[in-house]
Length: 216
Image (cartoon, rainbow, N blue to C red; front, side):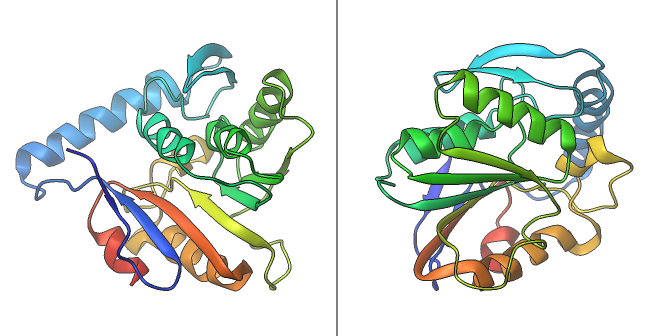
C-alpha cells in the first residue's frame, strides 16, 4: 500500500512507496521492466496523446508516459489535496508536465516546469496551453535548478526523480537512472534547500525508503 510520510524535518515531505529488499527475482524484474520501458516506451519515435489525472496530454519521444508510469498520477492525486493558492511552485523533471498542471489546478499562482530533456520541456509547454494553464505555467530546459539564482524563490518544489542508481545511457534514460549513488537526487535536495523560501516545502515522490533517509 502506498504511504505518505509527513514526518521529515526542514520542510521536506517525501511520498514513499516502500519496496521489498532487492533479491534476485526483484533484480531480474527490474531489468526486464527497464528493458521494455526503455526500448518500447522511452525510445519510441512517435508522439502519443493520452488522458491522465484529468488532463489531456501530448507525450513526445523520450518522455515518461504517465499512463504507463503510474507514479505521476499518484503524485497528481496528492497535489489535488493541497491548497496551493497564490504559491510559487517549481516542478523539477517535469516530463509531460502532469505535476505542473496539477499544481496550477490546486491554485498555484505561478509554476516553473523544468526538465533537462528538451522533448519534455516542449511537451509541457504544449500541455499547459492545451489544458488552459498557459498563463500560469512557464517552462525551461535545464539540469535541475542549477541555472537559477541561489536565493529563496519558491514556496513549493515538486519532483518525481529517477529512483534507480546507475549512469544513464542517454537522454531517454535520464528519467530512469539518477547516476551512481543517486547523484542527481542528492543534487536535487541540495539545490532545492537553497531556493526554497523560509517556510517552503519540497515534495518528492520516492519509491524506495532510501530517499526518505536522504531528506533527513
